[in-house]
Image (cartoon, rainbow, N blue to C red; front, side, top):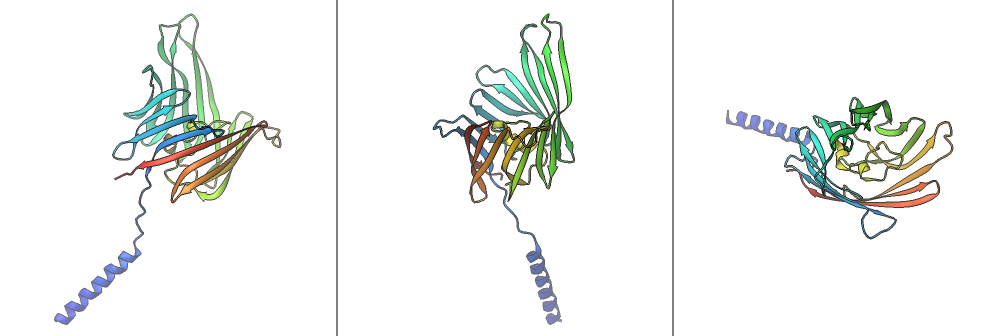
Length: 277
């Protein structure tokens, strides 16, 4: 009887070992991005810097931007508020639904109505599944007599077209921007995104808020270029991307810009010092 029990115990132990061998390995989560700096044309002083702070659960608590303007973004309920550091004025807000940005409002003061704050630009983001495919825009401005506002509605202002997990075309009216990709996959913590711009070199392209616009590109872009329909063969501006990696982290990206024959270079450095516990 004892031998029978011993045999059954050994079988059970062998089964547990086999199941353990079949388990997928646990992949540790990469550290969060905590600082971005951008240098233009080899300058020693940065064009801009941004410091990012997080809550214990890994969600962004604040972003402090220093460049041509000084502002701070911070989490408040289901939105991120943008505040002018020097004046304390509210500049805008990003509105969330769950963990996805669905709208952005730009705020201004109406000098014709005792500087009351109004929404000058209202952007809404449309998704197909988790892919951002459309931006609508309402432009608003005050009447000079101080009696209300006028507005214009652009329901399909920006469009984004996806192939194989990447945005390959950004379009606005007759203008197009095409993106080409490497086979290298984008690290999950890297926030580079195709934005609604034909000069994608400012902070908006690399802000960690980009990780809240649904699913991100699968691969890293290596080239982008612009043209206007129907002159597809006439490239107006070109952008080439190169990257430096340390382990699983992209620590530097360079974008070489050629805009109508005028060349510029933008070097971005990235620091990752927040680990989710």
